[in-house]
Length: 373
Image (cartoon, rainbow, N blue to C red; front, top):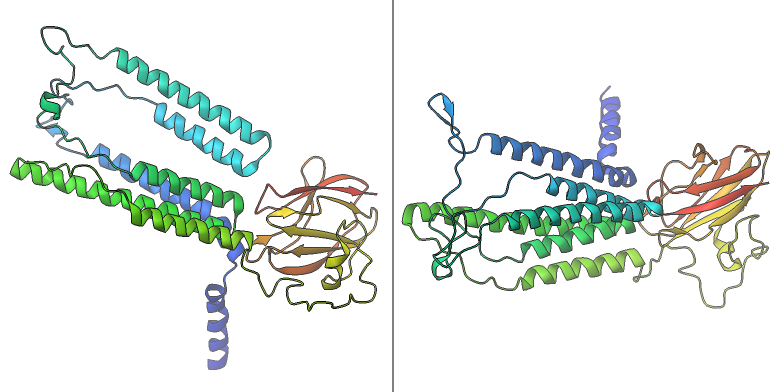
């Protein structure tokens, strides 16, 4: 009885100790979406409950301070965010979607720019007698009394760099995605820290009457250095600059002779003879390297079952092979995800003659064509 309970406990803990990293990587976008939704919900709640919104039984109407021009509500930031989403989606999906995403982003940004130009045109200009009503007075270069102007900051630039690293990681995959996420989180935490310090400074000004803006910001040399290390590490890990001893053929001695019959490549594989000694025999060979299918055009035997050898040469990166017909329906899929470097031979059932495509579900930019005849 105790032995059975212990075996069950070990089997249950194995699901956490040795997780399916490929499946966990696929869950990252959903986790980011959930975090974004929770943050948006929290922001809406804070705005709805901010400040003294009621006096007695009547709601207090917001009053703009004298001399301050406030633009009206706008959908432009939301539209620009939608345009950015489509651009990022196009960079990941590739093809026509990249141009569609870029066009949507340009249209939304042009709309935002036009709206801001209209707001600027409605700000009254100052005359000879003094500043017009609604203009922003700034005696001696200082903001109006009671108005807090935050000091200049490098944080928007750093967050843009972190977001760029994340998008590049979504395209590269593997370690690039993980390190890009770290870069974005690091820059966002820095921005949040600065915003917290500004809020504390405003609270101190309410008590002391003195608001210290902090002056010109110092160059964030430490953050730049950390981002440079992250980018360098991503390049080293994703381009395999450091050789992997477990990769096929990495430990081959100089002058070693090929195995008997190694010069014959599998039918329709389209690979070179140098890779044949480390690959098992199969009817069809598909190779993935540097997050692309190097065998972009393959031939499949039609009307009978056949074997497919999948050679994943990307160290630490999961891939699979999904064969689809002309309508996009899945004809065959290798399961589970294969993390490289590794080679597996799959038994594929018979398929009808025709033209097919094969893709990787983890990296949609990996595509190829197959002809069954």
